[in-house]
Length: 334
Image (tube, rainbow, N blue to C red; front, side, top):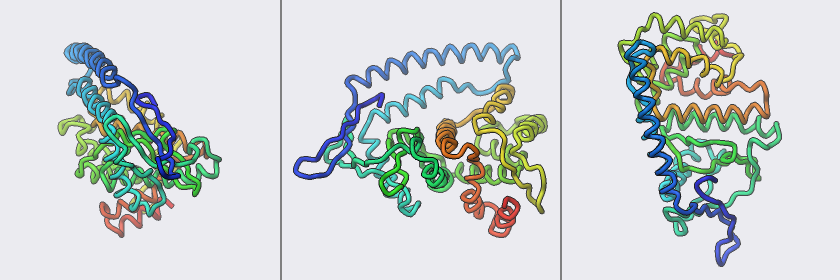
């Protein structure tokens, strides 16, 4: 780990092995210096962008660069506090594991041997999910998708660092989550709007997605909706996320031809011309989904993260659409 080193030790007087993460010396000073330099760089970027907005090269929007660095700094300092990580880890054990019917595993925390710079947890033998056999990856990725949708759409607390080294497979072939230093809270009203957005994505309803973006504060209320709608519909059409045929009142979504990252690249040009502002927690969510998809395609090159999310999103959509309409949507997507 970049911030600390993990050791496998045995608890004195027992046969239990534990993972002891010890923070590297003087990390707060080193991180603080990096953040100081990054913040000055962000201030320069904001000054340049302000000039470009003034001359009309960029659309006028709220500046976010310094605010983004401040958010990153807050997360960085939280990661340096291993007591905070222990609290997050215990919260996931108590809340998320039961929600997934114990199909995932989170290592137990040993509070007695934990401090701000030392974290002691249960040692779990296992291999990285990304290095597992294709059949195991195919078996566990749907559980991973459900796990992160549960965090995002229902619970409102999100593990923001699910990189390959933090997703293991234990001896019982359960998905193991590690490293809870960086977690984000999704505001409760936003979980409802995100659920709406998932439903509208399933429907191929671009106008609905645009309304959801406004509710989520991605866009201001006075945005030029007619012109933006045309551009977004073109992106959806080109990426083949939008349905090519209709079933009843809803559109089916065929297998997409582009990955989640490719769609994001297509949207970047639009972001520069319209006053988009992505909430800090959503940037972390996007990163988590991209990492999960990257692991999944190693086991199944045709993996579709949207298709994998449909069954769970459909379940959550019942509270949004009502049971009758949600069932109709499910039939359309079958």
